[in-house]
Image (cartoon, rainbow, N blue to C red):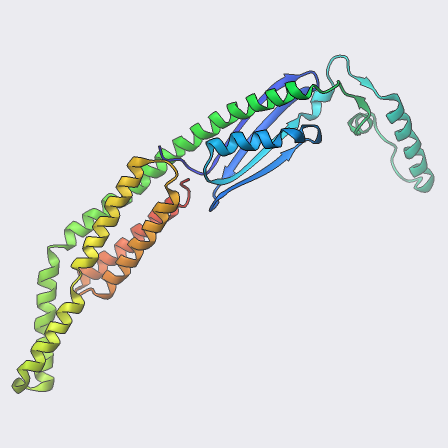
Length: 288
C-alpha cells in the first residue's frame, strides 16, 4: 500500500488524574523525524512511544503530543493544596506592595496555578500502559488516514504515467518522417552553401545530424522508467524516495528529447512530458 506522509490522529482516556490525550501529526520530510511534546510527569514514557511510532511509520516529520487536559485537574475529590495556596498569597501580596496598580489574582488564575490543586498520586506503570494503548490506537488511525491519502496520490501519479505513455505512443510514428524532412532541408541548405561538387561532405553532415537526432535511446529509457514507476506503485511500501529519483530521471530524458527534437511536434511532446513529470513530482514528494 502507498502511504502519504501527512495525517492526524488522536486518542484519549479518563484517568484518576483527569483526561489523558495523545495526538499525532505528520507532514512531509526527507527522513523520519520524531518530535515529542510530553507532560513532565509522562516524560519516562517517551522511549516506549518512540519505539511504537518507528515500528509503524517509515518517513515524515511526526509530532507526538501527550498531555492532561486543562480541565482534567478538576476531578471529583480534587482539593486545594493549602501550602501552595498560602505561598501564592504571600507572593501576590509582595507584588501588590511593589506594584499597587496591578490587578489582584482571580479565582480562575489561582486554580490554574501549578501546584495549587493537589493531584492524585500517579501510577506510573498504569499510566505507561495507558499511554501505549492510546499511541497504538492513534497510530492505527494515522496509518489508515495516510493510506487513504496515499491511494489518492498513487492514482494521481498513475494518471500522469498513463498520459506520458500516450504522448510517447503518439510521437513515435512521427520520428522517421520528421528526421527525413529535416535531413532533406539540411541537405538542400548544405548544397546551396557548399555546391553540388561536395556531395561527400553533404552526406557526412547528414549522417552526423541523423546520429544526433536519433532519440530511440531516450524513448526506450523513458518507457523503462514509466514501467518502473508502475512496478513501485504496485509493490507499495516506502517508495517515495525511489519515485522521486525516477522522476528526476524522467525529467532528464525529457530534456534530452527536447534538445534533439527534429520537429515542432516532437518538441511539443517533450515539453508536455516535462510538465507531466513536474506534476508527478509534486505528488511523489508527499509519498512515504
